[in-house]
Length: 269
Image (cartoon, rainbow, N blue to C red; front, side, top):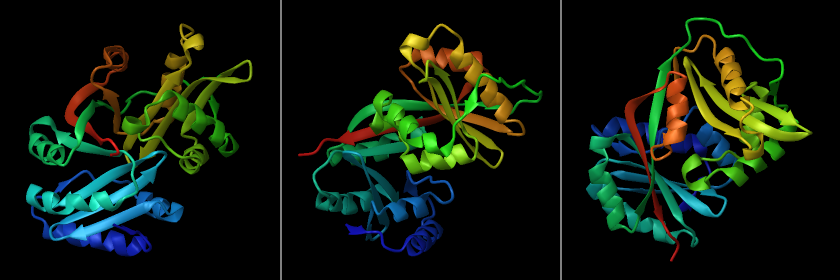
């Protein structure tokens, strides 16, 4: 397992492997620029074997594992390389239609991973009518990234929520994709989204417990809809066991689209 020193070479290797594998197994779905950003932070490792590439990102207190493989047999041959990493929990997402995840999950469970949580993707079509904004909703400034990041890491599960670092929050703020409400100089409610092409992805939507019941979440959602004007598709991921959250999203027109994210964890020895 070697540190990634040249992201451009890694991107070329990924492109080459994708062209070689007729039907690949992977959880490596990254937006443009993500690999380059990770490489600049210097927390990225890779291992390449016959028919399989493992990519590991060092996060706060654990390692997140990505893979691109030709088969489960190739995964089995490469998986032992993860033991070369410094001791820490290993976390992995398996993303796809539910019916296609069982075989690859069984492969990773043989290596010591266990089911942790299950998320499902919801979607709705883009809005066809304009939605009024809300002057009481603020767009975060890049200078507020540290405090926003601190709230996310305090309130959300790092294993399953892919929490951003301050640099990512700053980039979102520069693109006006971080919305919030303050009460008594305290962050009371927050919504972060990501616009990529014609897709708008709602990443985090949170209201502090003491601020609930005031429709702050609804106001944020309406402002988010206004900010997503022109998007053709709006998506988000939600914990399948969080019935209350699913009901709220369905209220806003979201429906399951058949994609599942099974999160697996292997605890440190």
